[in-house]
Image 1 (cartoon, rainbow, N blue to C red):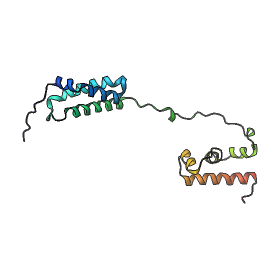
Image 2 (tube, one colour):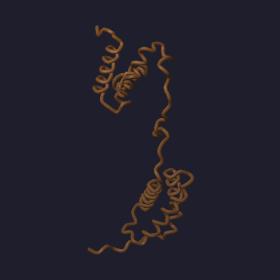
Image 3 (cartoon, helix red, strand yellow):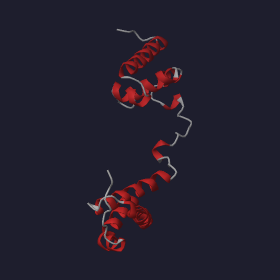
Image 4 (tube, rainbow, N blue to C red):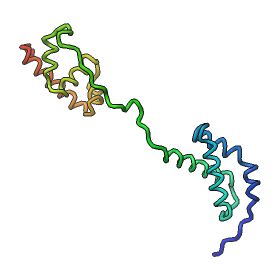
Length: 164
């Protein structure tokens, strides 16, 4: 099956008819700074591919698809930047146990293993439920319950508090 030669309008007619649409989409996808560059790149790609088109239907859609792909290429070419929210935490010295209302209790809390200490602090100082504690510790709610339970058992034993 031999494909027929498609009669295409002159490329300039295509530009005259659709340049606003291409520019608008490029700016929307790439921003006002890079939008003109994306539109220019889209026109370059369209010009190179234009003689080989096998259909003259929906030339506007064809141009906008090229524009969207050029914008995607621009975004992919950029070096990924780490959002500030993902910055590593800064280690700072915490308050001394004597600064708390019950220095004996907080001294015992400081002696807990790290995950237990963080879990019990999030639960009772941060007032988080076990789902919140689990999310903060990147674990499950069941594991959060176990960490808090073990921490409380250790504190009761260390402080000589009855379990009843």
